[in-house]
Length: 472
Image 1 (cartoon, rainbow, N blue to C red):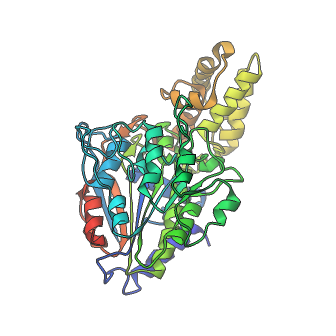
Image 2: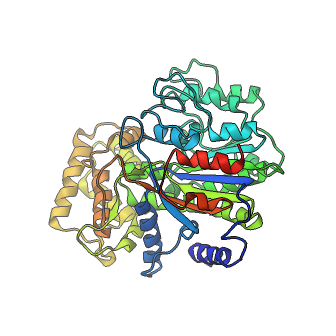
Image 3: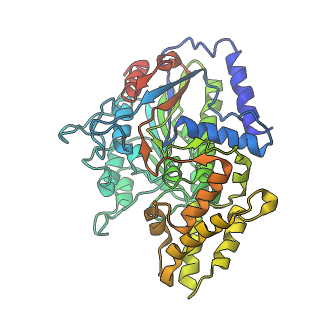
């Protein structure tokens, strides 16, 4: 049975099981907060329509949370901008207070540390889990345990992590465990000295069991800055966000209860690069993680609350550019834009002269562009558009660094950016920017206290409602 059909049947079962759509308890014992970084309503809808397209269907294929009984939205602005950054957004989502863009867990004067919902729950005896597909000291996961003047203070954030004494951290690693200058005390060793068990292999991870305390579990397959490889480029030794969520449930389950935050962090990153296919795969991986919580909810329907939302929307993506949408063509993209840049960088570094034909052969293989039998033939103008990008990227065959190039090429002029743009264009997808937007983001809720989220709220309301429901 396909996952999308399973999710639909599961929610229908929940809806007609009598006790579940109107939970008798308003005080959840187990709370899941899922944050799809950069995930607006259009990211969800396009992912659903993509699943339908590749199944040769017209009606959207549901994600795991698409039919939750409560669906609303939240506003996301920060103190100093209508368009929030992730650190200001997570400060609101974790503490109930707004702050300036760039600030993490503190007020605008940088003199007050706001207590987070996770810290409150820990004091009250709940077990706490924080998970992410990006570095665990990145803004969103850090927002639940750290308090810094600036979100980029990664080393300082990493040293705050063990002080939280939270029970389970999972996902990405630290950015700079010995500081940017490589001279600081090792953050991993600090965590171990404070009682944390660190795992960074599949074997160690799957041997973690219920009752283990203070676990810091890293994915064994990570990019240099500590984030997961893209779902579309997933490595054989990788551990999925769904795996981390399932293991988190096992580790955290106890008589008192738990609070778990799970971030799909790379939805945002794909949207920053206007890479629709990579975004879709990240959203589907996020949906799979939510599915793990839904399975737990089935066993504890009157004691569990699941919330799915976002910190902000990224990219201003829409389906509609004047042409009839053909999302099925997106299936021809086999790698992320970042991995494509890595391939181009290797070509640049290994060859004195890289011909346009060489790179176009790769475009055909990895994106299907140029293949008329796939409906992806290129016009003369489109070939010229790509050739201009080829000249920009390969002029003088300068040496490059793949990850650095990926992070800096955001203006749509590089060859890789143009390839991704053309495939998006042929699918009927448009983007308004490479940055965050001010649009409101969705909230999906199911479980004990779900009715508290049925109307429009602000991001600061979410932790306040959770705290009230949990009796904190």
